[in-house]
Length: 342
Image (cartoon, rainbow, N blue to C red):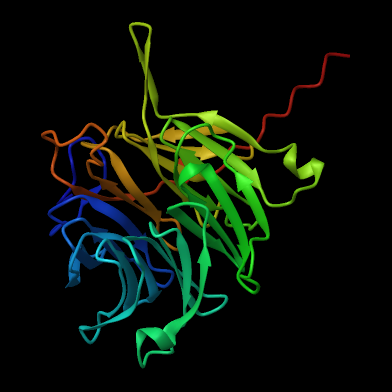
């Protein structure tokens, strides 16, 4: 298979970014893949055909990107701007600005708004239809307790993870204050937050090789279901090496999820049954980002050094497209114990 790597990691996308990959996302409508990078680019690929369909450049590193529809998207940059791109026409414009690098961008299909989180300790909501100028597009600015590190949406719910281990949960229909103010149940800095596809809660990962499974419902019955687990670690000669968990991606059909760490591994988990379903062969570098395609047939993997050990020699940044086998992501039925002999 052309572009296949010897270890069975998947097909390698041609024309990858020339510097660290900050995020990648599949479209909700096709196998189009949007990729943001520290090389100041946002790239659109057809992941199935392995074709680079378009590229836009920023004034600084691009820290996040998301789709609007199949041929347009938004990006968040270290140059403080939030931009919109229309790949079919090659047009771009600045939707708005923050006072510091913009770390996260999400598009809400429920409200038609763009939500951005910045190291200026604010969240901003934008209406991309108010396009006659950035000041017309801004819907609201919402102060956060610290710098925003990760955002995730499900329906009208927005989860915001910041520095200082804060987690704010909002209802997008009433952004005046958070619905819930929480603290991460993990002791170390948050790397990634992702909502469950069924809307009942979220998974949160830290720099210290752990993932927490959380629930929105604050009743004792629901909160008793929450737990955390260790992952992306290795033990050699009695010494534990612990790696940051950079990425979480939920499978759209089965609700199982993949995690990616600085150890170069991608693991697939069944959160309900608290089991690891699969571990893919090791990738050349840290796993910086993960995304399942809309039908769950493909998994995009960014193998890209995240500078966790400083500026050292490292493997080239690459994007792998894995074809997913159902056995890797489908929960296994619980074994029914045999009836005792009568």
